[in-house]
Image 1 (cartoon, rainbow, N blue to C red):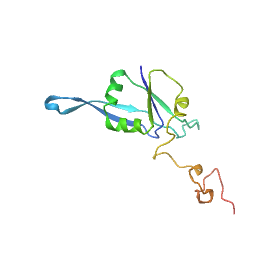
Image 2: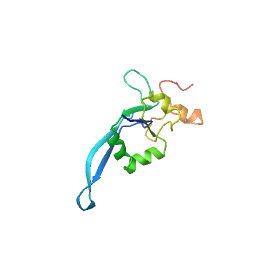
Image 3: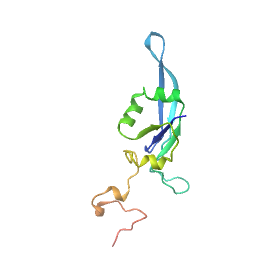
Image 4: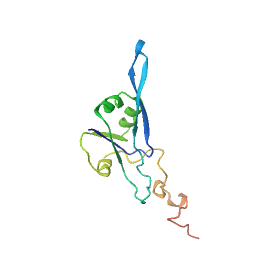
Amino acid sequence: MPFVYSTLSNSQAYSLFKKGGADLPIAEQICVIKGGAGISNNHFQTPKGVATEVTKHQLELLNTCDAYLQHKANGYIVEDDVEVAADKVARNMKPKDESAPITPDDFADKEKAPVTNSRKKAK
């Protein structure tokens, strides 16, 4: 079974269509690709990437979905036939999308970074 690896912060539900009568698209199914990269889980672990197992048929339909293809072209999604640790695959992918939470490391000027619990502002 193929695997889809994602560095997106949120899970994505892609609507997959097939051709119906008079060439009108008919929704066949919804395929959810797991997100959660860069988001802390219940165990205070922050994964760099997440894997979702899909069927070959779902993968064929996903490759006809414009939103999926855009995420793939932007480097947030990678497909593979073999299961590999998602964090290893994520090393070669775009690290985070626009919906990822900001961190103090996102600011070039550390003085303008927001104060967080991990770093108290000096008085």
